Amino acid sequence: MKNVTPGGGPSASWLKRRLPWVLTAIVAVGLCVVFPRMLAFVELAARELRYLWWLVLMVALAIYFFFFFGRKKD
Image (cartoon, rainbow, N blue to C red; front, side, top):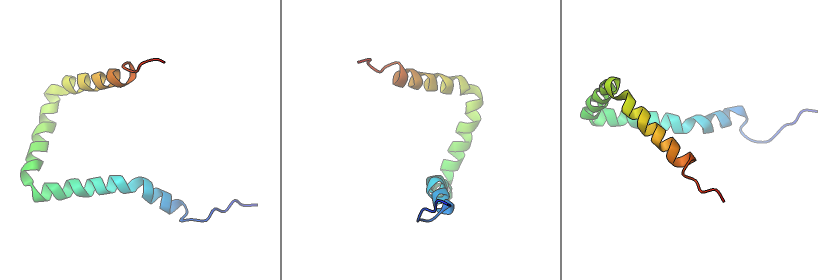
């Protein structure tokens, strides 16, 4: 016997999972169209990451340590 659950099926769950990403991309593109200087800033920031990748790595490591080693053990 086949288990049939009522609802939208697989396409509805796909849409639920992807909708926040699609909306984020649409908002980002919309902001770049409305504020063209933002696009230039993002491009400059991406170019500077070539030289400052170690800073991004250290911030990520600090966040990791803050959340996982800063917890109190009860």
